[in-house]
Length: 337
Image (cartoon, rainbow, N blue to C red; front, side, top):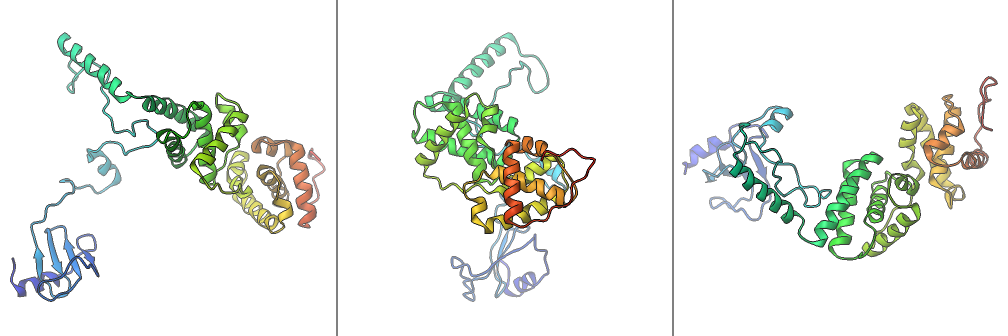
């Protein structure tokens, strides 16, 4: 323990924000000298100092961090000895151990016959212990299908993790027995996309799944009802970025599309009961003409997954109700009107 004058000098030394951490108003800490509640932690020296009077309350604290230092992200990743983070998209959350199939040690030397026999038995029992119940077998098959569908649809990691969590809640709590695994995984992906405001249509999911659109819809309603989810209403604006990227249009077209959709929301009759994909497609067609980045209705309909008739009908409604003055069409271009 240091003397009072020495601790005053130590507490008054300027230190960087990364070296010391000040915790104010901590009721668990009360300085025995002045009764203050302001605590300064100095991880470099392992000391806890009273911020009011400078008394060193304790020292020689154990540093629970790594013994190495890293100055770049690549260096930190290379020196880290921890495994991959826990993931709900893996049936055992990625916490189990894998025994490699190659019969070589860390130095590349081949195992002896006796050692290969031991490793073979260990590998066999390790696989059996990883999947030892009906729930584990179900999750193993479902997470494999989830990984395949997510790759086919190009889903982000957050959507994939949320879909895995929704599926786990149903299976672990045994809320959905004797149901199609493929259909339930498709329903979980559809629900996760809507919650994350990156919606995908049932047709698009069914196109890459092994079950029909009707079956995925039935399991989606089951999932929402059993888990008591409050699903957000589909917003046409959530479809716009993906459609714009597929059509290769510039950002100013997307900005104009969002302005048109915001004006349409103010007139509820234009939005209520309409397919959000059709509204987004019609707004893209209008914006492409106004910004003079013209795209045919056929290309927009293919990107949105709707028919050209739907795009044309929504286009006429938006132009009429919002009083949009369209640019004169070029005579040397073929149009779908």
